[in-house]
Structure formats: structure tokens, C-alpha cells
Image (cartoon, rainbow, N blue to C red):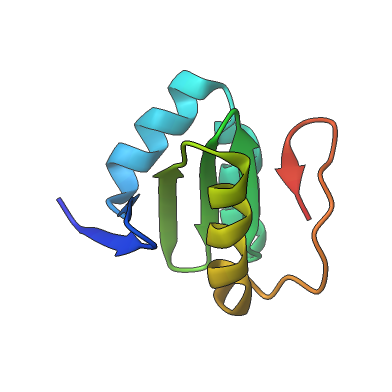
Length: 93
């Protein structure tokens, strides 16, 4: 299993595991669509952040909202966010 750490949190980068987690959480559709469209997207389900990039998927389980913001700040360059806004569906733009 391919894992990295961001600010002491485990970042899961194994695509099959992230896909299974996202499906269980009910947030797989926007991740799959973003990959098909060739764009990056982040989806927040509770305190678990899922991301889709042109070359793979990630998931990171945070324990506080502050950790979510910290992870987003660290992922911002790779995801190319100009700004962050939370859609009612939980999709982060």
C-alpha cells in the first residue's frame, strides 16, 4: 500500500483503496467524473478529504476542521485551486 504523510496524517494514494473508500462514503461520482474530464477535484465527506488528479486518487482522514484546511493548503499547488468554496454536495472548488 502506497502511503505518505502530510502534517502527521496518513495520506492514502493507492487508487483502488481510495475508490473503495469513496464508494462507501457515497462520494465516488464527482471523483470519477473529474478524472474522466482531466481535472482535479477535492470532495470532503465529514472529515475525510478525497482528491482526484489526472494521475491518481488520494484520501486523508482528518480529525479536526483545522487539519482539513491544513491539508487543503498543502495540496493546493498540486490541485491548482485558485480559491476554495464548498458546494452543498461536499465538492470543493
